[in-house]
Length: 327
Image 1 (tube, helix red, strand yellow):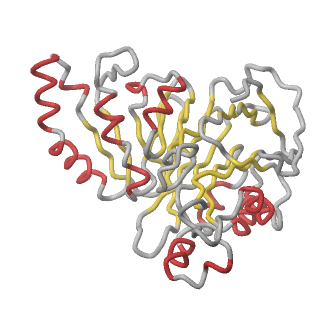
Image 2 (cartoon, rainbow, N blue to C red):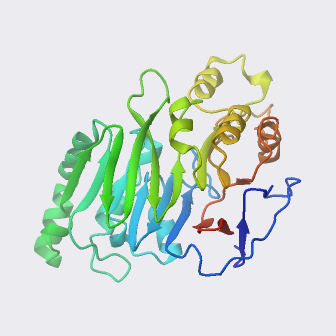
């Protein structure tokens, strides 16, 4: 990853991987946005590829550490960043599909250890849709032997492995010391309800994470005017749409052209694609997955503003004069 910071304003057209885009640098203090950072821990989907781990977004605002979703490899990404696992003790879950939650046992249990990279103090706080409480209670039962044994053998504190669950509905779900998290319902399919996106507001600035969704008017209402909009995307070549398998997958996600409409209407200072449903889930040995460049080109049919293809460990500073990017 390049250590340089780049600041993107409303007139920026930016991209990655030589996507025929350009960047404009704002005259901004390097410290601007230090108090509000958003990091992509994982930008992938169910396939266990190495360059895109499972969905996870780290939000650091006002001295607080929040985590949105906890997919495969979130603990490894936090470790790479030098973030103590124990400090990531406020987890907001968009929905209960396995690729968004499979990393929870690792973060919860490993963050309890007394080693320097862990050291959680107090309960592991989980905010999620109906069903979250049952899931966490079941995990406590599944790992009962490990928990009981470590308390007896290593004298680990029982209060630091405790779980606090809040099953959320649409609206403000967290508001503490100037950091506000608002959940809004999105459309991930008729049987996947509720599914949420989240908006984080701090210091007159905001970031929105879409979660998994089809084109959503409710997301547009909640994301309009945000500084940073992180949105999922799925794309498949037309010749594969004769298969019911690919039809079902695509029917649950936002297509690039639709995402372009979302960005055009919400007008974020920076739009970012994450949670890519491309390779290898939407390909065959005979028909390759769509490329990231093709995805961006499709989105550009409806949107000409600032747009980035997200990568794991990409960091965004949400400043008062723009959003700066470290990649």
